[in-house]
Length: 96
Figure 1 (tube, rainbow, N blue to C red):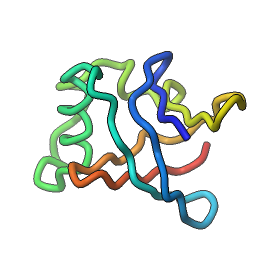
Figure 2 (figure 1 turned 180 degrees about the horizontal axis):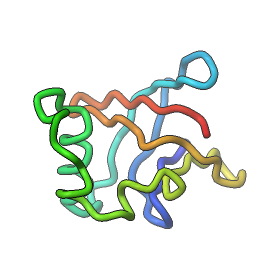
Figure 3 (figure 1 turned 90 degrees about the horizontal axis):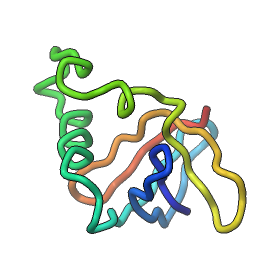
């Protein structure tokens, strides 16, 4: 399964589990993704920065849920919430 932001491949997800609509798995990020993705994911899972408004730091493209998808093999992309991607390779998301 692939994590896609707009038309950018972010990473490959494996070991998917969960109970609809909440899901989790392991992600291997693409080495070529822009540094802003790493900064964004780090910010979004940092509880110490929960009081900071993300739009002040990141543009609307990253913060718009309609821009995030998962795609399995040759299937059509399926919308997800903004994923929580942790530095240890864990990923969590909710189906839209």
